[in-house]
Amino acid sequence: MIKVTYSGHSGFLAELEDISFLFDFYRGSLPKRDAKKKMIVFVSHAHYDHYNKEIFKLRDESEDIRFILSSDIPVDRWTDKPDVVFMAPNEEKTVFGCTVRTLRSNDQGVAYLVRYGKETIYHAGDLNWWHWQEESETFNKMIRRTYQSEINKLQGEKIGLAFVPVDPRLGEQYCWGLDCFMRRTDTKRVFPMHFWENYEIFDRLMLEKCTEEYKDRIMRIQNEGQVFLLDS
Image 1 (tube, helix red, strand yellow):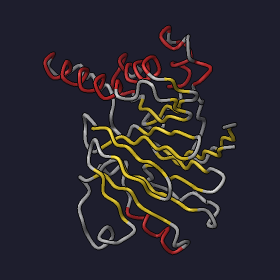
Image 2 (cartoon, helix red, strand yellow; image 1 turned 135 degrees about the horizontal axis):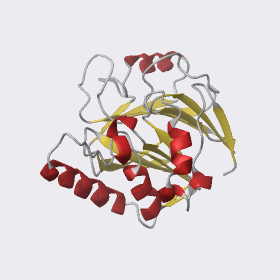
Image 3 (spheres, helix red, strand yellow; image 1 turned 180 degrees about the vertical axis):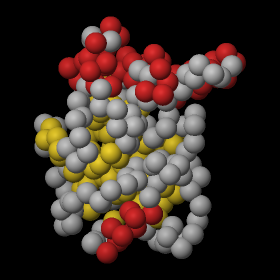
Image 4 (tube, one colour; image 1 turned 135 degrees about the vertical axis):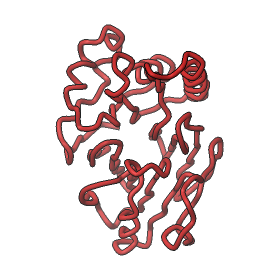
């Protein structure tokens, strides 16, 4: 059983039997968790909507905690600690028995692929198919190629849980990244994220022709703090 709590925007807490993973928390109250479990806190990059130094208050709750931060995050009094691990793109490290692999974001920082026991979890951070109408064809082609190249690295992985952007600011192209990800990976469940509190995005996703083959694997989020109890 995996317990997933949505904390807003791209923030999620995933709790397994003996370990918890907190991804890209940036606002509100830190999610409640079982302090007896080991914990890894992930930050994909330094943008304000993915990184909040409040996460370091979790040190007060447990010594069995590690922070895995993208290498673009500055070293300061919060991060210059032995419990902080920095990761650059295309690295792999083992922390608390977890194998953590990074992909290169085509925006800033990294995406994470986390393997622990039988579970594999993917968090995209800001790795996405960012097709902006106001940008040049050359820019958008570069974004498409870099996104597809990174997602192709996940082929062959059996991903139980994924968190992938569906940003409504992209207009009709908001779901291109999700669609590419779901068609090129073997993913059991996907949580759309980075939708700026526009929960109507889930109604749109259910009506898209491109999602017909995998709409039953899309987890529908209705509010911050929502809890999902999922079979492994």
